[in-house]
Image 1 (cartoon, rainbow, N blue to C red):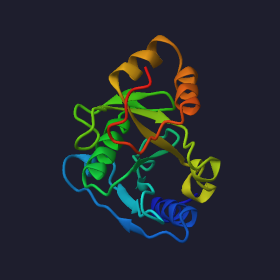
Image 2 (spheres, rainbow, N blue to C red):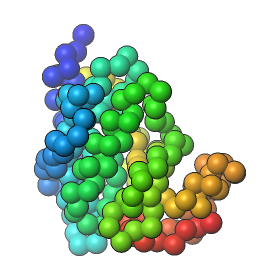
Image 3 (cartoon, rainbow, N blue to C red):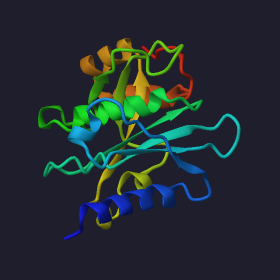
Length: 190
């Protein structure tokens, strides 16, 4: 059986390997109750390769929350580096650590504030990691087979659409309209 420290090391290795050639650096968040629920919680920030590319913030250790459930790690993409993204990942990971609040593909989180300054989006859609595919999504068995899911900022009207229609229909609209998911103040698609 793999120890928690071995799993944590394997998770970090998965992130570093996936973004090989990028600068991968800690983006810590130590405020609030995150360490009480998820003691091995860490965040890494991946710098874009070129101007205009995505800054990626990713959890490492969210899947080691002490439950017996399959582990989940989260990431979000941003057009800029911002400390608020570490706070958001800590908040989502803490929320997810409670059995009654397990997040999976299609879950929606109301974060109660814009996901970043000057944005109108206050919700995050838990989605498959479409920008990066299954190579990022599934960590190796040494990392406990944790699944990396994307936190995509969305508008309230889009939340309502997903609840009224389907997640597949919403994702198809994003794709067909070639929505720039890095625009912090993009217009809603519905």
